[in-house]
Amino acid sequence: MAIKRIIEGLNEFHDNYFITHRKLFEELSNGQNPEVLFITCSDSRIDPCLITQSLPGELFVIRNVGNIIPAYGTLNNSEGAGIEYAVQALGIKDIVVCGHSHCGAMRGLLQIGNLAQQMPLVYDWLKHYGEPTRRLVLDNYKDAPSDKLLKIAIEQNVLTQIENLETYPTIRSKLYSSQVTLHAWVYEIETGEVFAYDASVGKFKILENRPFPVPNIMTGLALE
Image (cartoon, rainbow, N blue to C red; front, side, top):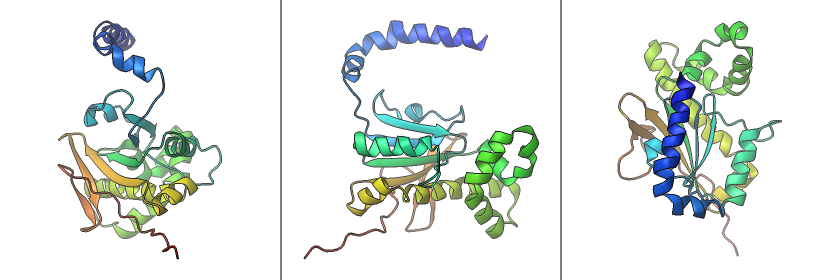
């Protein structure tokens, strides 16, 4: 049974990894100081700590279906609460929105009518918060083949969430003073590669030795 394997893994973690990293966990018990807010999909095939090789305590992670960030002002928005806490309380300066290849949420978004009966809650989530991406993709890329259309939807969805992040007062303020940097990524499951949006060429490029932060279009007024 899968749960039996999970329990075996817990024991393996405690008896081996935890023991050899005890000092790290003792330090973490005194508080957290993550370096990056990593926003990604709930999909089981993407593991933020694994693909970035991050230690416990280095990433503050928000996950949901489709790595979607509702715009500021949405009621009952736990994503917004997490973002606000990460930036205001933890002082995080880098925020990554990371989509991934073969995303079931984006596939469902492109065929959203099929979800209404079988998964009404998923339908409501994607219809309400994914509509800007769906409309942009179907209006502008309707002649693209289905596999290409899915890739476009995955990438455009990441960029939409970057725009939504900019609606949050705390993010807007930090962007204004260059205290926060936003990053738009897509993880490719089949190759293990990560692609980052490069605004200078208007497309996602493989991420190797340097970041491609989303340009900050907000500049502060000169103080007289």
